[in-house]
Image 1: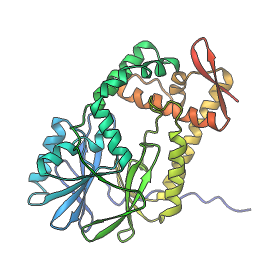
Image 2 (image 1 turned 90 degrees about the vertical axis):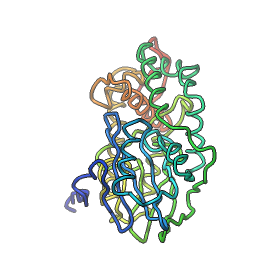
Image 3 (image 1 turned 180 degrees about the vertical axis):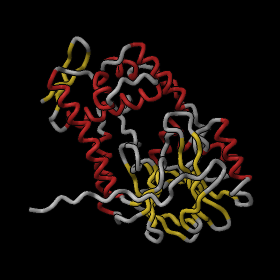
Length: 348
């Protein structure tokens, strides 16, 4: 009989993040800074890589006055005398691309992104009010959200998506599978699906590290949501496939530099934890739907263990509940039918 061996815990090389206005050098010539966010998830990590006589920037923080002032503090503090050379935005979410336009215009910097993420950034900036139009409103209403909750959700989502400076009108395309040279380093480019459509990750075999953006986080699961524009999408399936690919391709002792939380070592352990986390949510949904048919809105407290009243959190919680539902409908574990309370799920 084989004894059960508990997985090794994650290793955190840094016990605390950089203080506001400061940086930590995680490898020679690679610097980590942290910027505040006005949400429950109250920070985002950004990284800088020596690039010739300057520094290439990975992600920018959200566009608000506090973050602009934080950048001024960095540029007048630990980055003083170092010019920025380019911006690499990992994905289109405002906490990662929010100040790309502002920094690009201020310092005449090129923006590097994957093609899909750049187009998404343009789309939400050009017409954010489309969120309040049909068929998006009926999408939420038909899946069990009240009229009041739907209006709050759409209004809050509109506010969040506006926290982005106008993106540059041109960009340089990052193609997954290609290599990018930054200073004396070569980075393999990888794409992560699920959290966003074509999120960019950069892996350096030389330094044994990966800039993982939001794909693998140490303490939380990144939000994986169905968007109203693709109501039958399967982002959770894409996310789980991406996680398995990272585990297969990267060494166990790779240093993970994430978009949130602390850097860590222990990628395969964390991947296994994340996969198990989502399966536990799927099982909770099945058990609830065996008792009675449930709308997606009714399943939000099932998977989160509480009622969510905060509008910003509700945007993500509802989309995440639907992501689990869509995955299970595709797998034949749930089926959807019309009920008096709207579209509801029952165990197959």
